[in-house]
Image (tube, rainbow, N blue to C red; front, side, top):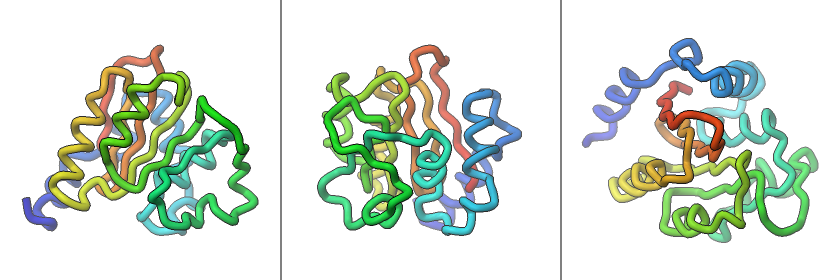
Length: 166
């Protein structure tokens, strides 16, 4: 699908916070994603910045192939704890088989962990991988923007997939 057409189609399918019927996700969108300070950084990693601010993860795992990420590396506000799993936030620059391996290893995450994936539509294969990953049985809540996505394990929540405008 062409880039412009896929963006327009996504925009029509996506909602803002008022179209979300989950109190957990509505609060996250209202207090973090659509908060004025988060928008200042541009759309590139808005969900990642919002998750870091709103959920305040302590144990963060970043994929080894990530370039220096200004959101975490060299940033004293990142509040990273060196240590082992389970992790509060797992960060991937794009959908890959490595994500599936982590999801299949429950020792790497806990019920309140968050998985961030960037560059969802970098290629057709990346988006196909994203769709497969978001259907993983352990994933209960998916928040998808055009460029990036968040996965939540929250067992207490019904399985839901939200497409949002950022």
